[in-house]
Image (cartoon, rainbow, N blue to C red):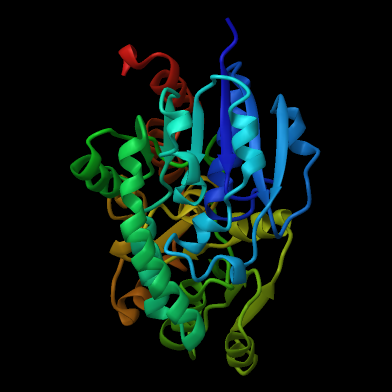
Length: 376
């Protein structure tokens, strides 16, 4: 008998070029490969409809996301309220298939009595209220900061909707421990990603790299920190690459001879930089969820230097160099810049990553959790 699954995505999961959308797309691709008949529901607000998704799904539905003015004064979080759709509910009620909710964003109908007898699975890409709280802490724009703090408070209250879920899938050990303690039905399934095997190249690159969505305040803060505290007055070429850099960052690096800013690159251009850098320097000030850029760098790049917050509860500590203070990061970068990346390092990565972050293994785990729970 065919296995069918509804997936409600908070956005159109193509192209898979940021955060949780990467997890959504590559999980869809793998579930399709395992024979699951997928019925995908997407909220559209910043992306075009995608023919690519039709390759992996039986049906793809699109729903307009409501604007902030119609949702910001609601007691429900904006990210939830703006994704309420009667058309979505009607489509979900056409059959009795299990429903997979991507994040709290899509959980409007999780507690609805009309779905009381349906199997309901929620994918938590992080602890959402904590993520928004941290966004508020680093945001300089007062209006945006107010929004993030208010949204964090609303999300913390709204999170209790998860008691209506049959299963909660988490991305890190810390998140899994948190949701297990609160709801008792959490399962660790690490994020899905673009890499099928380690493709890192031995040898040496000619520059260090930081990459990320620079429109996110935390990433912008990290890029400025690295430019001013680690690579200032350095002889090592440093590249910062990412979407929508701030005016502050653009202005800052103009006067730095060893630092180059590469904004809004294509996926192939970004992949080239990550593969050819000698060191991917990826500290974070926000220890929430799993940073998929770390996974991508480990699968495809050479040396990776991080701080503890980036690798906590990921199982990836042994594959990175961990330094905290700026002067220690700088010293480690200078040391590694004179060392060749070896095949031995590549083999070590493959062993760890194939065990913990295999898309094939984790896709089968999702299938078993939904259709074969006696195997888990």
